[in-house]
Length: 340
Image (cartoon, rainbow, N blue to C red; front, side, top):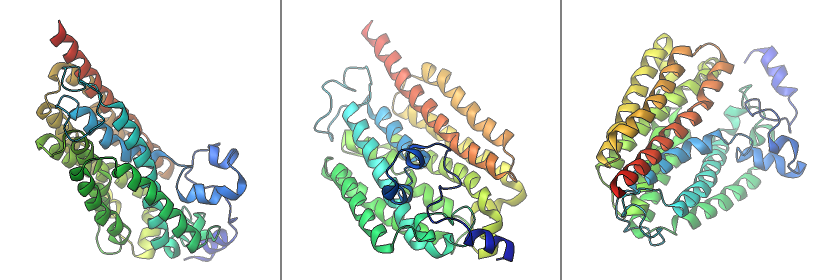
């Protein structure tokens, strides 16, 4: 590490806001000061990751809505069976809670493993464990509490979905080590972050079919794409520390790789919708906007501009909204046509 960067890191206040957090977020402005390091450790000042974890869950629940509910014992009467195809609202709330809790737990686990590395990188040096604002014991206690919340949500599902949820924990546990051994840590993150594509369907139907499997494949590609964009912020530091990423592997060809992964993701999402019997025409009419959004990300991306990379990464929340809206509106349109 050069002397200038080392001096800058040493001068960073222990309770400084994260450099990639949205200015004026509630954690940095209204949360009690003693709680702020723990809230930052859980990334509640940067909820974009929780939303990106949540969208595959919501997509899957929405796709499954046209199936007869069997696995979800509290399913709203008639949802999916009456042709309206509305996603179960209780499931959506449970996945919302679970996604925020488990994303926070994953971040705490990741920071525990990477605390020494984070202290050497300008973007991550202010993280509570790296800066010393939170002790290792405090982080472990927070991790345990968050896992209990996630477990409470998981245990509300049937046995099949519970077992499926536990399998994902193996991938989550391994993820922080991936960047030390492979240029594809984004693929490992994709396997973990896309698990909701399987969970949403399983929680509602009590089984797994082709639609959620295809959706899962598409979500993995989507995660690889947007996390490669995110990793562009750390290319220089990763090279210095000997860490690996797809951003480093793709190099000057990063846009071509992103286009390929995003195209595969979009095709899989559309195919999953077709397999789930989502009305094709209304879905396609709305899904075009989602596809155009991904195309814009690739075309407008400036790989050497960290601020632009962060902005493009965050914009995937918009893609999640567009896909969810396409599925729900198409199913509602189909239900309306069937009732006439």
